[in-house]
Image (tube, rainbow, N blue to C red; front, side):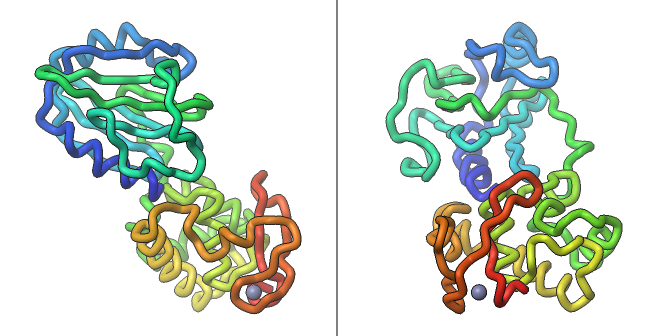
Amino acid sequence: MIEVEYYRRVAEGTVGRVIERVHAPDDWYLKAGTTATALRRTLRGATITSTRRVGKLLVLETTAAAIGLRFGMTGRLLVDGAGPIEKLEYSSARQEPSWTRFALRFEGGGDLAVVDPRRLGGVVLEPSLDHLGIDALEVRERELRARLSASRAPIKAWLLDQSHVAGVGNLLADEILWRAGIDPSRPADSLDPREVMVLHRTLGRTIRLLTKRGGSHTGDLQVARVRGATCPRDGAPLQRRTIGGRTTFSCPIHQG
Ligand SMILES: [Zn+2]
């Protein structure tokens, strides 16, 4: 979600601009029944009115309909050819025209483009936000406690489920739990009120810190995401597991 917030800020530069042409060459990239024809018919002549981010979804509101953009691991947003993070960890700085999966050309010149070598992202017209949980930066402690108490899923998997809190990816989840000193395999409903308080505080602090640093890959645990690595805090050999279907690193000592 941190990267997506950068993209949202870049996309702010398109507010007030009028869409002249829609470029949607890749049907596979259009999700939830969205078609290139529908995008063209709906969006041509519309004005971008605002941008917002819900978890990892970037929403461009227009005078015609909302456009939802997902970036997956490798997608990037460019406005007038420039992006916020040219050296984003997962994506190549190299660029081929065929990697442009979606673009809006504006009247008077300039464009907004989604460049995605691996096609893990997607575009949706009028995205449904019903299934998304509350944004991770906005969830209140009381709300977090209530939601956690309703689930027996491992806390790591719980955090990754966008219907609980939106915006926490794999690296961020590991970093948050490592900082909070919570074992990622603990059932969500087993956290006591003090642990929920710590988790809530750590959630906000970690997201804000990594946003300042430059992305979700800039956490302190990141350097230790290799086999045989040790905990940057106490030097214990880190544990590597699969939780919620994702590779999970944690410290058996201070997260025990
Ligand atoms: Zn440790």
